[in-house]
Length: 219
Image (cartoon, rainbow, N blue to C red; front, top):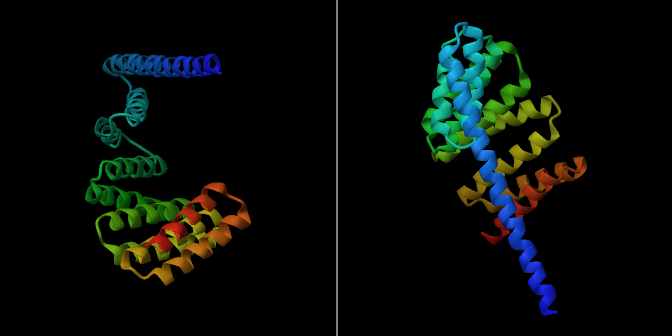
């Protein structure tokens, strides 16, 4: 029995070491790619090539240095972009600022992105941006603004029949009511979200709903 336990522990240690070595290898490979792209950027003459290299650098840095990723996306915005790509970059910058806890900065870029998607009449992206704006307002303690944005986003998600999106927003509205201390109202939204999640059999949405319901009862 002891021998078997030792073997299990040994295997776990080996797997852990392999995982660390793999992560180190991937990190070195990523840094090598970044160095190569920086050299290519210095040598590039055409704006099209420069833009693609800058975009790749921004994407690579996004996984471990969001400040640097933002710098590259801001550089990308100085090039001639179609509206769809410009809106995507603006939203990505907003998301990275949000991830860094810089919610005011995030809101500024989210609103710029939203205005372009409105011009493009892209309902899916409009719904996404409104949700992002609501999340930023919520993080800033602007609950009424967040609630208003979520309600607007809810109408859009329902119109495009995005059931998972509807479930998520209903949960988020419920969470705001939890912050208000209005738990019966919060539960009503969480339960409605759970019903939709079960209908579409989406495990992420189901888990999110059950978690929120549990926390609501706890509070």
